[in-house]
Length: 556
Image 1 (cartoon, rainbow, N blue to C red):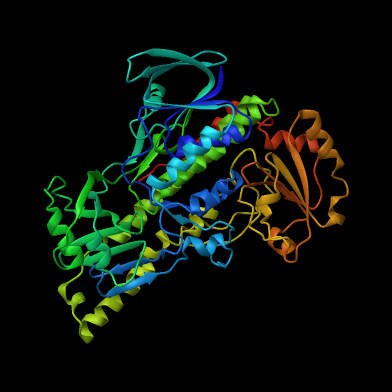
Image 2: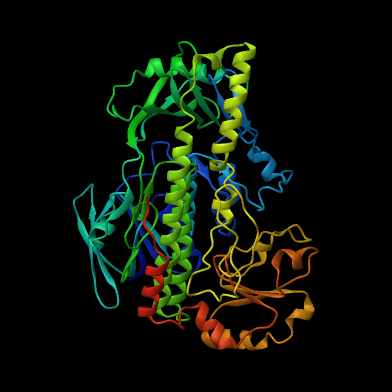
């Protein structure tokens, strides 16, 4: 019997499998696809996701994938792909991050986001899965359904090539199986929110050396805005392949697309190209009514669907996976009760709703920037002034989807019943800004240590008690003993770096396995009471349902 069956081998499902295996939890990952994704999808691995991949030992490998190491990762708004600019947002090539030369006060992390298409990083996740013990990946296998029993689930599988049906048993099942999730349907759960953003797109994956040569410099993403249309051009391999999004009229979502005309409008003249694949899609912002039904859980697109906007969907789904993984690990290893798993929905569903609202707001702002006049292409004082005006407007309204430090680092669980509140409030959430905080529930701020490691690098796989200076460690023996009696993994780390006291705000901090702060203070409270709180012993399930309903809200 497996501990967990994961339905879906996309980035969310495979990251969940990797994190479970890293913690010693056995898992079976199944997917009806015969191999990794064959169409370019998510193009950005967020900084917070890269922090998780750093812990799992694959961040550098992912950072070497995709664009060539020296390829610029700038985002530029232009009249044509190689034409006059409205504005530009500059970011480092992967080489500067890998060699340690990149530094940024704006991005407070050891792992900034990485511009890489899912085509290139998903195989890395699969390769790593194959190297770990305790986890199996079955491709070409479709989840047909499951049955919940008192202490396990029975999972029905279909091998597509042979028609052979099998049944597996597991303690839990997690649906990471996309927007049409079989697990979600079996749970009887609906997606609610805004299903009609009037945002329709045609996307095509193309190969064109002429398109690449039409620009005077290399960029990661060019957002082309001219009087003929609105187009987004994303470099996939940095040489000749591109993903192109074409905005379609809201009242004509099925309008035929002349691909040659699209490329001509992007470049300003005819170019040779080859279509590798294409698709149509509509934007939405919807979230599952529930994330848990007894031994079944939802994560990723199975739990929330929204229009592609800065890669929020995949990266939020990976956040789901990390939150759920350590809690399943805790319950299976006996140092937390089953009620801890209720905190998964309590913590993550409001995040799904928060991101959905942010996407709706950001999308509506972006939509106002779509229309420009022919004057923008003119090499005249009037044309230059109009481009400057529009560039300022774009910078003010649209930059946050790329410089989304708040979305990466400002997610908090301050209202969660498994953190110990101290009366303080977390900083207000904004997509494009972040204020480091150790208010219980917040992500532990990043700090470089004297030896060149990041603070995250010295945290344990379970809970970590951070002690700021040797003098603050007096009286911590009680929690060490209490954790040992429960079998709860706890490591003690002393930090005496300059500036640590101001950044971390308290002499003692208890950090969760997912790098969020559980408690902070000058002196430890009763050890048993504290550990009861942070592992879900303190509140009964009925009380938790009240908490869940009080922090939930409607998307739209």
